[in-house]
Length: 154
Image (cartoon, rainbow, N blue to C red):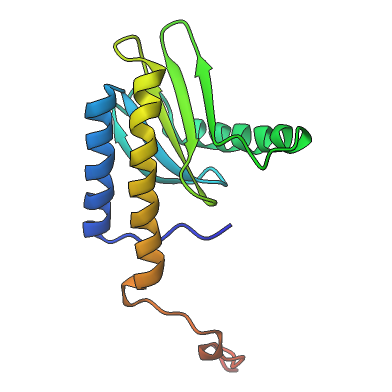
C-alpha cells in the first residue's frame, strides 16, 4: 500500500472539483476518497450526515473482507460494493489498487445513476493521483541523506 499522496492547495481544488461534479451529476449526498487502509484523502458533500473517519475505516474493512470472498470464488476482487438501507445507501468502488471511493446517497437518486457516474469519476481521480505520484511536487527523499550521526552530541 502506498502512502497518502502529498496534496497541494491546487491538487485539493482539482480533486474537490472532480468530486463536486460527480455529486451534482449523480445527485448524491457525500463522496469520500480513501486509501485501502481507511485514511481519508478527500471528501466532498454533506459531511454532517455521519462521521466520515469511521465510515472510511469501516468501508476499507468491508472492501478487504469482500476481496477475500472474491478470491474464494476465483475473482481478484469485487470492484464495487453496494449496501442498501431504508433511506440511505452506500456505494463503494475501487479507484485503483490503493484507493476506494465511497458514495452516500438517498432516495432522490438511484444506484444505477451513482454507479454510472462513479466509473468516470474514479478514472479521473485515479489519473489525478497518478500524476501526483509522478510529479512529487518537488519533494524528494533519498535514504542516503539520513546519517547515523547523533542529533544531540554529549
